[in-house]
Image (cartoon, rainbow, N blue to C red; front, side):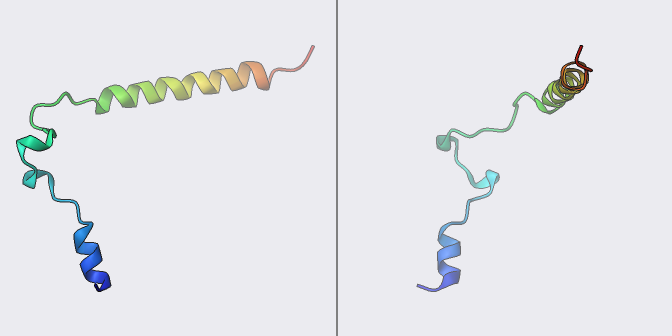
Length: 60
């Protein structure tokens, strides 16, 4: 077996080549990208708030 044959055996078929029996269907799925981006931005904002108020606050 050569190196090229080993790489061909591990190749993942494109989405179009998957059958309905594979259980993967991306046709009419819900687009979660904008929601996940909003959650990320809220999380980053909360992290900045916590760092500024708790860790960088002067000790009394």
